[in-house]
Image 1 (cartoon, rainbow, N blue to C red):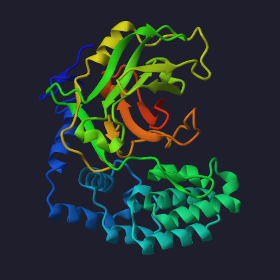
Image 2 (image 1 turned 30 degrees about the vertical axis):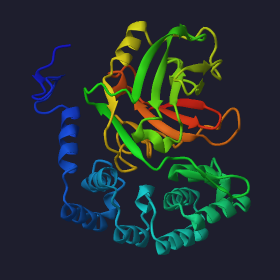
Image 3 (image 1 turned 180 degrees about the vertical axis):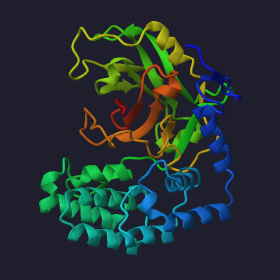
Image 4 (image 1 turned 180 degrees about the horizontal axis):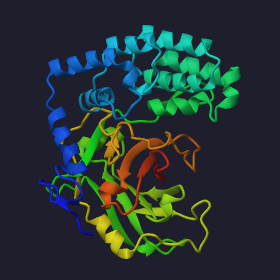
Amino acid sequence: MNFKYNCPVCNRGQNFEGLCLKCKEAKHLEEALKFTPEQIQERQQYLIEHLDDLEDLEDTAAEYFWDCLSLHGVISEDLQRAALNEEVFYPWEIYYHAPEDVRDGLIECLKSTEDSMEASHLLECLAMQGDDVALETLYELKKNPPKWREKLYVDPDVYAESGGWTFDESGKRLAINYDKCYGVEKKGTGDKAVVIGKTREDRCPHCGSLLVDLISIDGTDKRLDFLGVPGKITATCCPSCICFAEGFSRFNLDGSSEACFPYKGQSDDEENYVSDDDCKVLENNGLELNEKDSPLFYKANDWNAVSIGGFAHWIQDCLISKCPDCGKPMRYLAQLSWETIANGMCEGTVYVEMCPDCKVTAMHHQQT
């Protein structure tokens, strides 16, 4: 395809002058990471004055919100109180670890609403607030569901998962997310703490594609000891079928793993959309773990995100798998954008989850 222009930084062909989208995003990231405390405070004040614009992802308010949260881990209590006062319940991340008075206000709104859509947003907001009173509230709502529950697809414990936690039948808290986040980006240092897209010799029984170790994470690396796994975590899948079905694999601490077949809903004559050459492209992604951790929401609003831990950028809804062995909710481990790890081999993101006790990983795909 012939392009009229080229990006002045990366030379990518395009039909418009100036920086390509990726270089523009990289420039914005570089500038936003340098915000001073005063600049962050100015943006928090701007958000208080423009709360109604937060739902528009193209608006300056949304940009400021995510710059402050994902790059600097900042949401001011003044902003949270203003959002509650104006009954702004999206994005629900605005209520992450909000103070008790804000939590109580959210609970009152939830008790008084009769609208199922508003209730669903308030459940997400309380999930983000996430303290023990929020847990008790969601647990009580599951035991004694209000009228609006009839129009919701899932129970409050599933809503809680978007806040990084959930609870069992007795109301005991269960952790879903980890308390650290690392970006995975192109560095060129040869770091092998995280290896993405290693091609294997065995093939998928459904479509015949080469299998890949989608991600291998060295839990003995000091940066990754927050995962609590004294060895390697490897998630293996069919890169074609994983775009259509949930996949599981079992790992050993020495780095070996085995994909679990059959994939639910996949026949033995599925079409293979990933060639052997595509697998090699995936293998040569050049991505490495960052040296330092980032705020928990570092990649939670990034369509090209590749990260370990923290919060995910869910393209659709937060989806936490149940371990096929113990039945408990698994822990969110990583997100892998196809655009980043395989040069756009397909669209969307693969999310990886883990049961550390049973040494099982789950993988599933979302896209627009």
